[in-house]
Image (tube, rainbow, N blue to C red):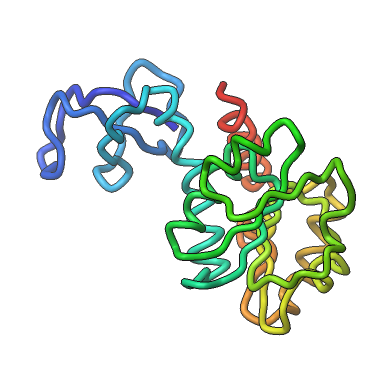
Length: 215
């Protein structure tokens, strides 16, 4: 992950010019004074963003977008529950789900309720006040950014054709649990990084945590 100003261009570069402020995701890391990347790995930095904020987007924002649009296949009018809505991926998830036309129920702690509501969440559940998974409401998609929902929890929360997407995990056991049982639901894939080696997945997860903490 990186953000900065274009210093030089290769012969085949056509989308950018020297001096453009850009951000992206370097395959071998971006912790350097200069990073050489392919044109497809760059985007113009959003107006009003600092370089620090833009550096967080490729993992946090990309993970949220991939989770909801590609894996969860969220459609207009879907009821979406987002567990862990106040972290790096969660903050992006709430806004992206709303942009996709979903009705969003967000789960967070007491101190983050107003912040999450300001992002556009239609309903905010405080997990410190009780078991938010037993309210009796069913969802089309459940996005678990924490990894503390069990298979039984998903079954309790989802509509018959609903599906779950799991981004975060609390243990290796949960990774195996989800890999084995997560694809039993209707339209979803529970394990977002099931198709990458565990070592690569762990690296992605560490990068995600760093991004969400603002480091």
